[in-house]
Image (cartoon, rainbow, N blue to C red; front, side, top):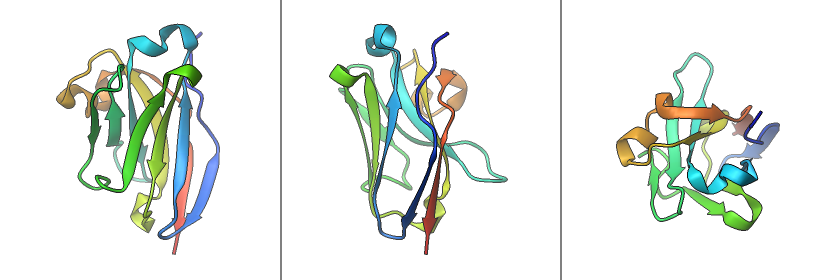
Length: 126
């Protein structure tokens, strides 16, 4: 059974940086687009960023644009989310997911994703 590898807890101070990793199955890595979402307690899952399967396009929510960067390393079957200038409102559980649908609209919709990681808790302390 396939799964996306990401988990754990990360703690950082305001203004700090973190890099999250999402390890995908080797045999299907090139076939899927990958997105990052986050969910804070009591809130709905929110789109953060996504990258197409060939790495040619990336998309960001307005709240993270200019601070976060999504990238993929084909040799390591890994998608990264580099998060800089973190604010307390970035505190949430972050999930990576894969999708077969790769346009801007579908990648922003968590319902189009077919496989998810277990999530990484990110806490930004002031």
